[in-house]
Length: 252
Image 1: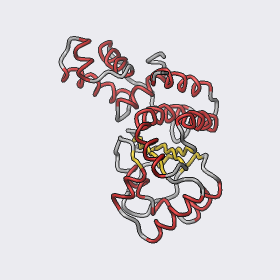
Image 2: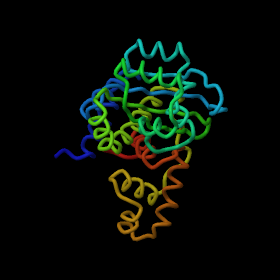
Image 3: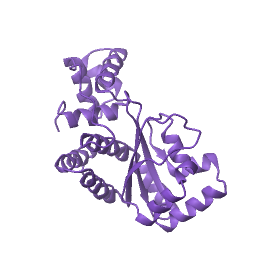
């Protein structure tokens, strides 16, 4: 069985060869296709102010059929999409589309929107919200499948972890090519202990694992990793790993 680390390493290598945002999207679509998904959307929302109020159209890179993208813009469906609003709430965990809709329910417009999306093969999926500190911009990656409900639910359950990591690698590649904003420069160098903790995170180690390996307390590990997040200007460990690879702080 091919390890997740090996797959992510190949994916990162492919992204590094991509010279344009469109090429990055093509890499992502190919990779999620291997997992059983069909389409990818990557979006950027500059510093949203009123998450519960009217939302302006946002920058989107998408492999979803153009007729759905056109309809989405024409109907201002971003204002009716609970998934998008939840992505803007500074969460960091993947959002499973059908779970969001089951939690909030549907009004008439949302029912029509989802019916139209289904006709374009955009039915079940996962979104990964990504918050960039500094300017307060929000980014997000979404992947979808047109599989039937039973198959889609099973596919999503087993794919949450790799999709989460891939989304953060895609984000670093896209911003590195100027989408939204360039990645912030690392103004402070990581200490050796901070770098070691980050390297173990990249290897899939937990806080407890790292404390045992480095012979330090779990609170000390958390302290070092908080410093890493601050220095790299990111909000999660996964984002820190992705950005560190992109900046050459970590090697495959």
